[in-house]
Amino acid sequence: MPKTHHPRRGSMGFSPRKRAASQVPHIRSWPEVDGEPRVQGFVGYKAGMTHVLMVDPRKYSTTAGQEIHVPVTVLETPPIKVAAIRVYEKEAYGLKCLGELWAKKLDKELARHHPVPKKVREKEFWKRVGEGDVADVRVIVYTQPYKISGVPKKKPDVIELRVGGGNVEDRLEFAKSKLGAEIKVKEFASVGKLVDVIAVTKGKGFQGHVKRWGVKLLHHKNRKHRRMIGTLGPWYPNYVRPTVPQAGQTGYHQRTEYNKQVLIVGEKGEEITPKGGFLHYGVIRTHYVALKGSVPGPAKRLVVMRDPVRAREVPTEVNISYISLESKQGV
Image 1 (cartoon, rainbow, N blue to C red):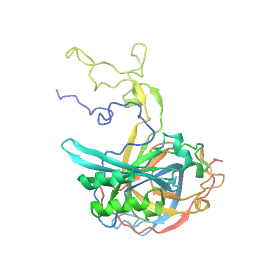
Image 2: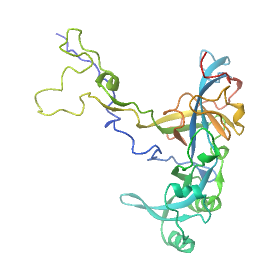
Image 3: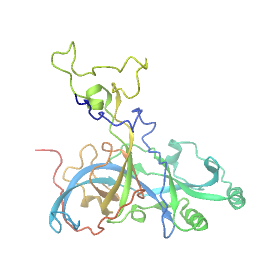
Image 4: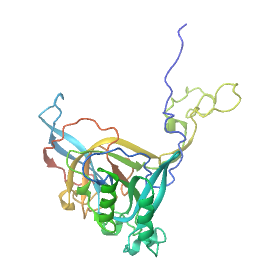
């Protein structure tokens, strides 16, 4: 008889499927970039989705040169502020923080997140930088949610972003020039550029075997239940293995989606806000970015954009003829 076999249902690559520790994503890797020093990431808030009509730039597509319908996700990206510079040195076990320098003037709302240092030891910081072997330069930035209406909070979100490009000395000079200043999204993103998006997905709470893993329903003559698994595994080993699909936390996991193309970068929110505003968000008032396709998380979710770590060649020309501003409230 042939061997009965089917691929397992649900990926074990994301296990354990537990709740994310924070809504602010933790970025574990950064790509190396060339050119002038710049910040390699940016932060925004997910407003919602709409669609555009654009000319298909893909050379070998069946619709090449024709107008196609493309779904886009809109992120509101108010300017971020640089709160501190942080430098790292390389050790046998990876990067170790060598020191950090905080700005002298910070927004009072930042104290809602954590106690702000009262003394700035600038001379001590630059002395340690001069004596140490600096391997990486990063900046601690915070958002300004009080400048937008879609996110009902004043407490800023704080995240660490890498400074890339040039040599270490150039990066330090760039970080020093930006300390305490604002960075706008157009300094990071441009039309046609690819970015990675990192966010925490929509939480769905405790769910059963079928919804969590996509296993088949049992036979209708099964005893008692259908939406369950048929077995917890073999007798030996005499414990339940982690590969067995079971009920548990579903959603609210940090996920990274690669190579999302930037289609629009704008400063006037009325250009992209649909009639009646975005569902569960409202009206965009500041800078915004429109990305091709979908992005993890519900409306209002913090989304981090990063330079692509798996960059590929795509057409960079973007020819948009129509942006849908029709109401998303339904008929």
